[in-house]
Length: 77
View (cartoon, rainbow, N blue to C red):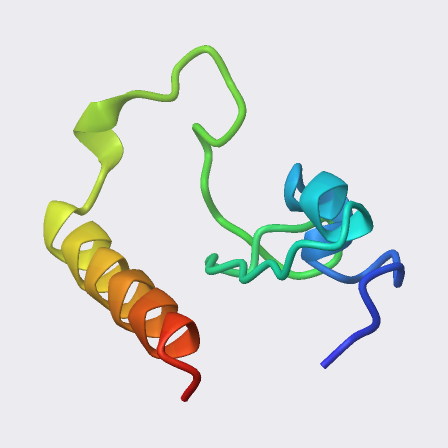
């Protein structure tokens, strides 16, 4: 794990850093989206980005992981 202030940290490059700085725990799930690692997403952060490029099955699985993680953390596990 990288420190949250490391320029290569995913959190450092997101809005989540604001919550972290305010003392709230933050978990970020992503697909290696930063300026250092190779990311072949031609529509990312562009005017051509559209919901039609979403993989809904993948998004649903990520949502399940996020919900389960939040539930376990809330329960103290």
